[in-house]
Structures are given as C-alpha cells and as structure tokens.
Length: 448
Image (cartoon, rainbow, N blue to C red):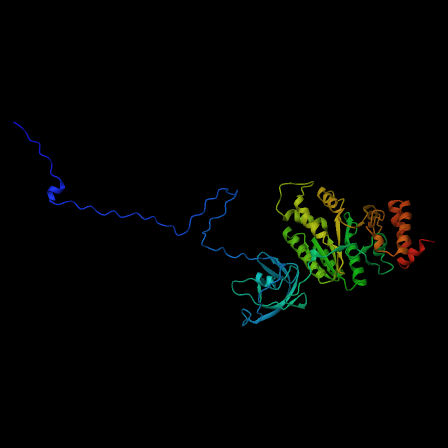
C-alpha cells in the first residue's frame, strides 16, 4: 500500500489571498536639546563644570571696597521711611557680608546693622564713624537698621571724592619730636626726652619685667602728650588687662580707650585691637596725628596664638609661627608720612617672666622698632623710680629729633654715662636732673 505524503496548507491557501506586509517606518535619530560638548584633544589637568553652550553665565560681581560706587544713587527713597527713626552714630566694623556700627569697641545692645550695599555705595571702610537715621529692630531682628548714611567721619558724604589709602602713603623717618616734659618733679618724661626721644611716627618698645612700672610709664606719657599736644589724637589699646587697670587708664588717658579684659575670649581681644587700629588708620588718612599706647604686644601675640587656626608647626614655648604676622602688622603700622600725618605706636613687651613664649615674642619684635625704652628690675627692687636702664635705651636716627647744639650735648651725656655702672648711671642722672628746672637747663649744665 502506497502512502502519499500530503503537504501542509499554507496561510495563503487557507485565506485564499496574499498576506499583506506592513510598511517599514524609517528610524529618525532624535536630536538632543543641547549640543554635545566638543572633544578636547589636550585635556587640562582640571575639568570645568559642564555648562550648556546656549546658556550665558551669570555676570560676576566685584566686591572690592577700594573701588567707589559708580551707579546712580537715589537718596530720596528710603525703605521703611514711615517707621519711627532715631539719629545714631557708630564705628563701622565689617563682619562677613554686612557691617555693624559699634557704639563702643565692644559689642552692645545699641549696635546698628548696615548692609553690604550701603558699604559699597558710600565707599565705607572699617573704622569709619558713620552718622544717619536708624529704625528700631523688627520682631525677627536683633539690631537696629541704618536707613541712610548722612555723615562719614563727621563730614557730609560727597559722592565722587576719593579718599587716600593708608597703605599707599609714603613713609619717612620721624623728624618732629613729641616733647613729653611738663613739670619739674615729673622726672620720668624728662628722662625719656633725653635718653629715648619720641617722634611723630615712632615705633617704640617699652621693655619691662614684671612690677617695674610699665603702666606708670604709659600713663605719664599719655599725660605729657595730652598737655603739650592737644591736637594729637590719643588712643589706649589694652589687651587682656585687669578690670581695675582698665578703669585707672580711663581716668588718666584723655582720649579713646579700647580695652578687653583677660577673662574674655582670645578672638574678642584680637577683634578689639584690630578695630582700634582701623580707627587710627582712618584718622591718619584724614590728615591727623595719632598716638596709640598698646599694653601689651606680648598679650596681643598670645591672643592671636589662641585665636588663629594652628598651622601644625610650633616654635619655642608652643608658639605658632603664623600667629606672629597679625601683631607685627599692628606694630608695623606706625609711620610718619610725607603728607604731614603720622601714626605713633608705643607698645610694652614683657621680659624675665619665666616663659619661653614671652622671650620668643620679644626677640621677634626687638628689631622691628626704631625706639626702645628698657626698665630695670634691679632698680625697681631698690625702689628707684623711674627704673630706666639708660645705657640700653635709645632711639634710632635721634639726630633728626634734636637741634644741632642739643644733639652734641646729648652725645656728651652719653659718654659720661658709659663710664659709670648701670645702676649708678641712672641714679646720678636722676640727681642731676632733679636739681635743674627743665631739660634745657640740664643740657647747659653738662658743659660746666
């Protein structure tokens, strides 16, 4: 029996018609919204963040305070003008992205907030004394808000007037002496005028061991300057001082006193000193002579050593070398300028305290000053006041501060002192000075 193989029917045989074929849709590549970044052959070491090419970057703003504001200032419209205001005056301290007008060198409840836009608009600098109306704080605010700047450093604000910059003034040697002599009985200031004269723009160190009378020296210097030069602006900067000493200095110094107690934070102590320095710079820029009495450079350097972040290196006594720059910048600001203004800084430095850190600080500042007044521990123990070490005290370029005839007599006095012992030189000179009415009569007696 033969079996026939039957082929399976196809789909076309079953439906008796050809199967339609669906049309093929062409594939169109999708274009990205942003163009691809070009391939860089020489790729730099760092990669910039990706930014679409069709997007413009935001304009960069300049926050340089030295450049004056060049826009249009409309002082007619004052925000919150309908609120009750009060005229305020304060010293500008820049803190971050805003400023605060301090009523004193320390923070207080009557401090006034000033925006960064006002600081740029009126070309304000730290230490400027600003006057204007201010409104009371709102519910969620801590400070009063300054509405308008009317006066800067006691003068009405004038747009377009450029003020000189302290760092661009030309320094010269001190060539005008500050006479401290006032009365016959005050031998301390008379000895300083002869041994270590102070000139305008002097950078002087008063080197003193403990209990040698350095505070008394500062007070008598302040009294002499206030009596003989009423136009000179006198400032006392006390860093880490005892509260009773601060009260005593406020009574004797006829000028501004910027003080911080020893129980305050190190950052606050440095902040007070920096604000006082900025205030002095603004006064010098306006053409005035300023004298700063600093007590002391040693405590200021110690405060910076605690306030500044550590660099990982330490010197003798655990002192960070980075902490030396800010106090040197403070002390180095003392200069005499060609325009007639000057900044004089007389600072005390502690020695013989038993601390390696204090010795290191003195050694670092020893060569930076141009005048040194040394106090003697031996004379202080023998109750000889003023306890000035005459042989070690002196002023650089002192011939610029004396007349020709007086300078020759000062040289003669120095030669006479070198023959005597250290303690005998001071005692003999004090006896000779006490017998004369003033220093002019004392210099005349040297030739007899």
